[in-house]
Image 1 (tube, rainbow, N blue to C red):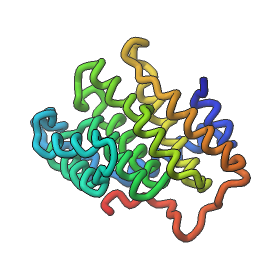
Image 2: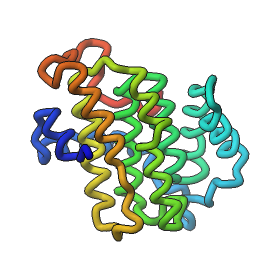
Image 3: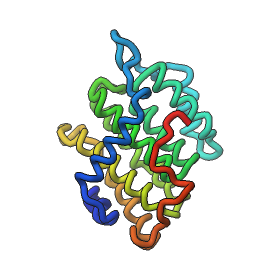
Image 4: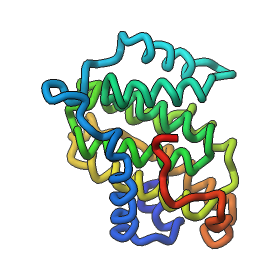
Length: 217
């Protein structure tokens, strides 16, 4: 089974410098990471919120999901209603469909920032629900979508790996029974990188691939 270390090795990256770069990128999501209010930093669980329900309905469609709508609803929910892992993972998926791996990397950096800033306060707050929300990233919906974008850009692969490294560090102290298992996502990313010929063969950064995230886009 693939591991995060195997993905890091495939990227030919050193962990600490990559984590440092990731933390710098996470800081650029500052406005999204602000508490919603002094009395309720993460807001109320959005499970029964109309926008959340609409977003989930789109995500669950077998085909023809409106990823633009998912993207907009996720932004609205995260910045005005609730800090929620489910919303953040759906945002990652929508960003992947909008922008390829660069979008996925940006979404994962946001998710890492939320985990670092709010930790166990994030919705859903039940341990097993939180575990399931994070493991959605490694489900077939995400890995199938990733296969639609076989071209690998070096900087994007590095950013994705860095964000996953930070997420892994943030959840590593969870008990075994509630620690999310993301190996399927690591494996899909590693396989995709190898199919592209390895990190030395992938497309280098170019004018269309910005190193600076654009969280407000």
